[in-house]
Length: 295
Image (cartoon, rainbow, N blue to C red; front, top):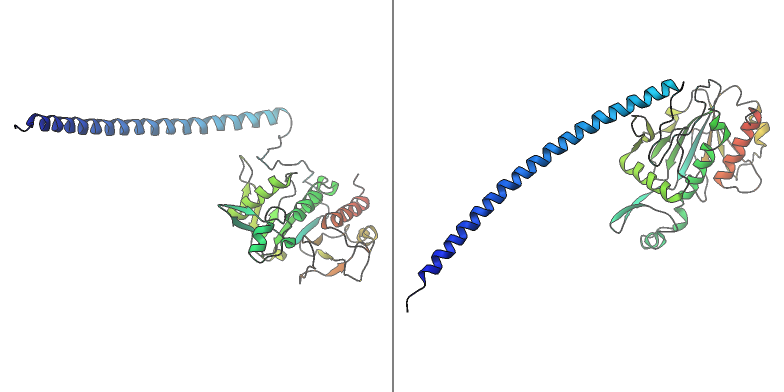
């Protein structure tokens, strides 16, 4: 039999044609990639130019209207308040806040007793200690108070159980739902800050300890505890203090226990019954509103 040499020649031709096609395909792919890079560069330049034009347009609108429009952040809008006041103000410090991030499954999440009870038990932790909703309610009570709207709130500081300290600007509007709040806290603890859109201002940022270096000079530090022997009426107790100097209120943001801080000058109790952190803050803000005639 004669060997089919012609078949071999055809295979070589097919291989050569295939190699030529692959080379052509690579050249076309490189050309396509170069075109895509050029289009991306053009899009970026157009976005920056259009963004600058939009910013200029917003500034012109604000000048025509006689004031600046409030900038809004995605997820955290900025609330209106009288920030130009020079009167004595207050500072809130939330101690022992239950804000801890852990990898549950394939994602990082803010631990809470409702969604991660099984995970916490497997790791020999008490689910009752993980209550980030307490911090959420306390921040809503502080930032929504008429005292803050009047510009008398100077700052809010939160220190977690693990010792992480972060600052919350008074003009920030915290999300109402707990899911969005948990997402923002997760982003804050991972990226260490949250910046307003279109501005360099950091609305939430992690700062260095101790908190005393950020407190006003010659301010009075008052801590709150149900176990304190000094039961006071907040309106009468603050009547002769808040008009002369800044006051720092230290409130525990945990489910149970007592705050222990060296910088606190006195511990007081606002009720003969154990109260939540949010209701304790509401009593403080109500007493301040009455003494300062804030309606």
